[in-house]
Length: 339
Image: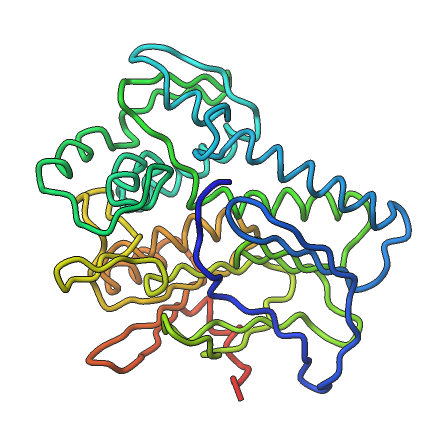
């Protein structure tokens, strides 16, 4: 598993705008990365057969876990994290690609997104160690923070070589699900399948459409107790990822601590944004940016998104009421009404 995740905050709608009883696509599903995966095909694939598709999908997801799961001691990422200071390691091409993309988002956000945030994620009880429900003391936070910083990582992209500076803990939990979605999408396309929807724990990528209309996805209304629709979108051929602070958290001494950690301060975020949705060409990019934009204060995050031409939507909770803000690039997806 890559991580233990909460319920996804995107919901696939099976009813189209003009039909309450849609034709059911071919559906394959299973378990990976601490959550569920689902692949929906608009029509039978022919060749390869459905059992062959399932076997290949499961093998591809297993490979992602073998490379990027911090919950597996023998994964590539865990082997790197356990290296002594100064030791180096050559990583697989897919690992190098994902790391390169993560570092790019880290640079563009001045460290609001950081794939080396692992020590802090673990300290706050959201990583592989046992979960706990008490906030760590400031000294422990300071110690973990000293081991965080993507600038500490020596990475030779051409040679795919990583050098462990000592105590650095890579964590791809904010990007690997998206990568898994993209891996499956590229596989389906390579097999001549071009009308599908892939969902790994709420990280979604759609291609083409269903037999009875476009794929429709609902953004969930932020509420830890219920599952209600806030907004409906038709992404077309694109990836949609939502990062929410309202499902994964713990409370200690009357204070709520979100699973979203600011890698610059060492503490969980505490602001009005409770849900951030990003639409992009691929799920890896959307996954990383959904996390990145959930860290800064909403106004700052909005400016970052505009500067980097990101299609993003924020749901803000202010004085108990929900408010919405989005970049211009997200506007074309908001023409549907939730009712």
